[in-house]
Length: 259
Image (cartoon, rainbow, N blue to C red; front, top):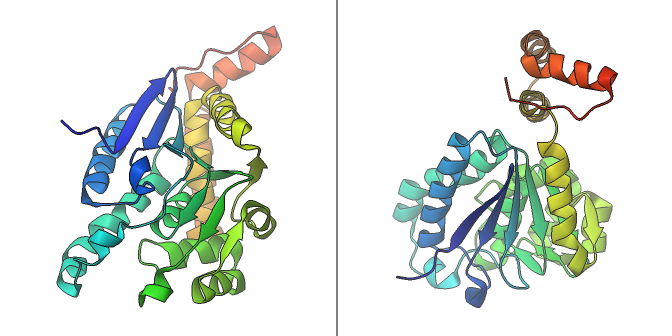
């Protein structure tokens, strides 16, 4: 039996998801997408997981779609399958748990599109980003044109997508594509430490805060304020809110239950 192309490991309240095709530069193929769907379904159902770190095996994050697969695709395949493939990144973006991407080495095309669907992006000093679809006669179609524009602005998105240029971690940090940069040996420990810090917060408050920020990117101010009202009404009635206040005044570590 072949080894899985997407691995899921749970370390207490933190889930570690690994793209696992290092010999193929972690390029995406149909098998990887199918296994990613299974991993996402498990994460969506397991509320004991409070934060997720997404990384890749080897020294590359992902070179994008497997070009051997690209050669087999046609318009009919895309018409039937692209909505499902796009939905994968939507599911990462809308996962209840915050998702931290830890990017090492090259991160091209569909790899960058996946990273853009994560909540927080950390990179190694050796990371290199690019969107090369145009040079193959295509345009980003896994949410890249939409999310990259929201993250770095229209002009920077056009520069990267239309020129197909690659940028290093320093430039990615400068334009806001990534949030923090670390030496290679520090990247995963930093991502895990951040995930553990988030996992220690009241889970309902974390979930509502993530949803509120996502809404801020896609809705009006009025809609966002209405969501804030609704989530505040809910959170003020939770056991976790009472536990947070009690622990603060008692000067002890809180014990959050997610209710």
